[in-house]
Image 1: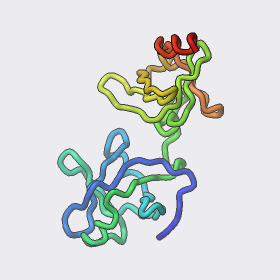
Image 2: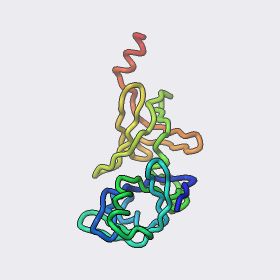
Image 3: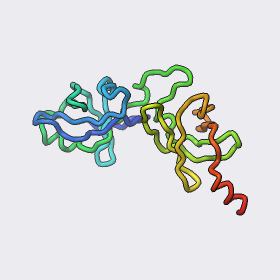
Image 4: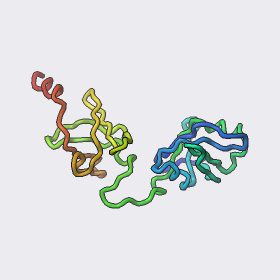
Length: 180
C-alpha cells in the first residue's frame, strides 16, 4: 500500500532479513530499542518513495530486534525492504512534558551562544553513557556540546528554530575574525 507520511520521524532501518517467512532484522533508533515495535503503521522508504506497512508482530532476538510486516510472508519480499528507513507519523509519538524534546525536534535548530554568535546547526545527536551530545555543524567546524538542560543548553525555541547555549566561541575562529 503506497502512501506518504505527512510529518515523518525516522525511528529505524531495516538491517536485513531473518529466516524464510518474511521476518526483518530491525535497527531501532528508539529508546528503549523495543519502543519501535509499539508503533504501527511504519512507513518504509524504498527507491525514494514511502510505502505504508502495518506491523504484524515483532520481538527481541539476541541483542537486536526482528519484526514481520503484514503482507510480507517470504524471504524474497523481505529482501526488497533491506536498507529501507523506517518512519512513523510525528503524531504517533507520545506527548512530552514541558522542557522535554525528541531528538528529531532538535535536528536543524540554529545554535546561538550567550554572546549572540551563531555556532551552527544541530546536525545529529550522539548517545553517550553520561548524557547525549549535540553535534553542531557550522563555520567550517564541528562543535560537540553536552545536552545538559539549564547548564549548557539554556533555551530551546522550536517556533524560532533556535537553541541558546552556554558555550564559548572557538578562540581560533575569533582570532581569525579579528585579523579579518
